[in-house]
Length: 326
Image (cartoon, rainbow, N blue to C red):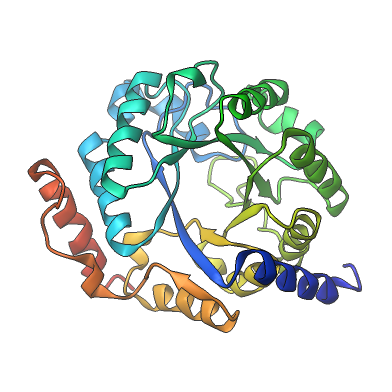
């Protein structure tokens, strides 16, 4: 461990407050499908499902359910982190239609994380930015862990996105075998491709993957990576994901430079001791929280404000949120 890690975190915190203020967002990735045509990323849950799914169309979510989820995010003042779906689960035109409807519901354009594509010119103002799934902070490990996701193709897509006026983001999962020395690769990549947003996750060891028995990265390791990126790029947006079994990471990740936090099962955690813990972590990090994990009044009525077609899904989400799950 760097002996100056706490000085590093203090400097990152001071810089974050100066450049971004004290607001922390709650972010939720909205999944479109559980199918991925590539299905060979070694860490990914979808890699365990590909051979089990006989009809990929049946792994697609009902679009009304997706829209209802977006409406609930709007009610609770959560940001939609991005729309995410495996390769070839939806066509470009279908993704565009979904994004357009979500922008209508939330009033804000959406980020995409739907794979490498050469059809970015099909999108318009419904899209805020494009996410490249770099995934690993070490290019050699990336080629082994994500053999079908060419870094050159990801980089080319992001550069094209910038040329078309879209913002650009990358995802990085920590705990896949990288080291602190690889942070330099990440910062070089951000600089070279003028990345606006970086989303860090900690490894979630899924059963049936080669990482099933691996541990998640240590909190201070995670924090040091985030702090280094923050100090190198004062203006960049940093989102950090942590799991329900690692909520204690939240405070130190915020102090290290995170603008937003993600990777929570929103409706399962809402109104529970775990949702309250998230809010307490943000509070004790000296931040204000945009959105709520506990205010049941924000759930609203058990019908949609957008369309009657969404009513049954809205009702289901609210009932799930009101259950005593733990």
